[in-house]
Amino acid sequence: MAAAYAALVSFFNNLDQIHNHPRFSASFDPYQTESLRAHIDFFLDFVERYNIDGGMSRGVQELRSQIVRAAHEAEDITESHIVNQILPESAEISDVRLHHRCLFGLQKVIQDMDSIKDKVLKIKEEESGFNYQKPPNSTPPTTTEQNRMVGFENELMQLKDVLIGQQSSRQIISIVGMGGTGKTTLAKYVYQDSLTMHHFDQRAWATISQEYDVRDIFLQLLSVAEGTLDDLRDRLYKKLFGRRYLIILDDVWSTEVWDSIRPFFPDNGDGSRIILTTRLSNMAPQLCSICIRINFLDENESWNLFCQKIFGQEDCPVELEGIGKKIAKQCKGLPLSIVVIGGLLKKSHRTEEYWPLTKT
Image 1 (cartoon, one colour):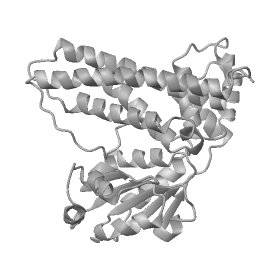
Image 2 (cartoon, rainbow, N blue to C red; image 1 turned 180 degrees about the vertical axis):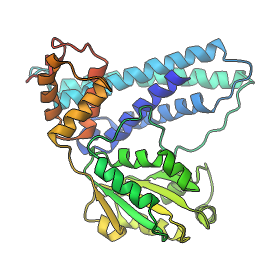
Image 3 (spheres, rainbow, N blue to C red; image 1 turned 45 degrees about the vertical axis):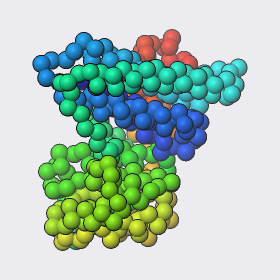
Image 4 (tube, helix red, strand yellow; image 1 turned 120 degrees about the vertical axis):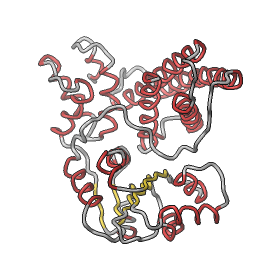
């Protein structure tokens, strides 16, 4: 299960970061990315929610192996596509050819995932040992790496101080920055932090985006699959009333959406907190009393994140430092770019012969 879960979460996080980056998200077919998200959600649910009595059947083991292969293949294609945009692999290959290569590659993966999904559904019907319940996709998947927040140490400390601080009234905090700068990553980090989990009685996460549905937001926050809007509003208010809670509203694009849900977050005078992530700097002061701004990484921070992603606790080999620093600099301070390229190079041969693909 661990291998399948890790592969799915890794790719899910990549899709999440791509979605929040205006340049990269525009270079992928939206129908394909939505299809991939739906498949990953389905497979995550499969590896997490099925309880099997008497051991795991051979059929389930094989399906999990197929899921791992499909997730890795999809991640390789998306990462390579982003790398080709940041660091063109060849001046002779046109943008159209690169786009078609990605388009056709992902379409094949989606077809493979369709086939795997059909097998999962068939086994679900045949295997009586399964206990299956499908929750809505609200809470962000747990990260598989406990990475330090390279370049965001001060912002992380500031955010934790506000979350666990002595201010008893409900506080609303905004994390503001351009797409790909790490807003969602920072929010996810504190949401999953053990101190945060112990400090708050209730935690909930909802992803908003530009095109939102108010009812869907309440469904996410309550982790339920159905209910009328009036019923959901009432249930949320009652669930949070009298309890210290942490709410994350990720990717907020307008004051209107906040105005429509704000009355249902009670101020219990017990230190409850609401975090909004947004790329609209002019909107944050209207919504929040505390604003944390995420800036681009400097060269030092970019290099440290690059090394951490590829080498972990080890040092970068001396022979790769020169070209490695050039690659990190070309990412222009965007954590997403560094993480994607670092993830691709981590899987490669760590030699000068392979890394020159970055030279223009």
